[in-house]
Image 1 (tube, rainbow, N blue to C red):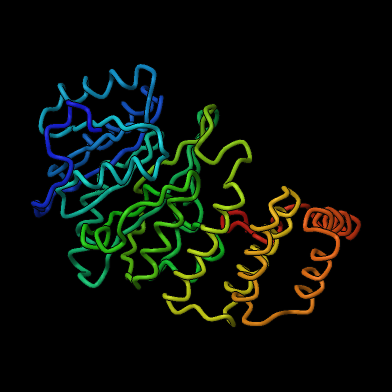
Image 2: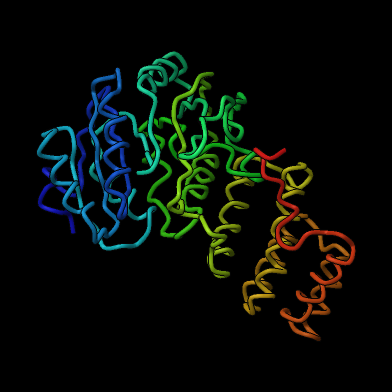
Length: 345
């Protein structure tokens, strides 16, 4: 339920031309939240609103939200939600947004002051584009900021696919979206992790074009506190099936073929999770992902046939352990080593 600090109804239908709605999901990060909000308030583009969507904070973040509302009436809005993950929190904020443009901002990151000015100019100059993005600067609390663009944000991409099959090549803060695109994408997923990747994929399935702004627009901060996907955690096996199935479906909608190198890469990546889900003891997820690999490959390869037959006889867990042992003897690393992360190549 929305907190009383939010001055608007849960659903807004009136769109304000030129307004940028920045949606910040947060949980138990008061100091970082204040810094993120300040970076939006410092924008040279002055038509702004900030919607802080609290994902069940139980510390002083819950007091800071109303404090920021009082300090910036009519600009900052705050809602408190039961904890269901960043995607659900973003969606609660999106339902309140009135802007022609939507900016999603993680609570531990910050924006450069001319981000909105630069990206709105790019979108207005290129009306065929649904989002504008720029460079990400990687910042660490214990070292100077990076001087080069993080991930593939320094490359000019005209579409989200096929690169999204290799990696999420930007971050949540890099793009500025047209509201019309966000409405077409629809609600955020309730996946606990990689819900932002899923959102990008659904935008990519719409075939939107991207406007490239070759300059730094956001800082992604790596700090002592874990980011959402920190400490090696990721999706539970059933949610991996949801995620990979959605990513594959969106890639097909975007026109990526089974012959594309990115799709072949995707098939190898998913197969690594077949092994991992088997090792974790989820036979149903392992089997579902194995069938997804066949779809991505466009055929039932000999390797897959042998793997499935062995799993049917010996069990998915045992075959996964033997497979990893064999890979180790062959000098191949354990896990999803087939997925070369784009910013590491």
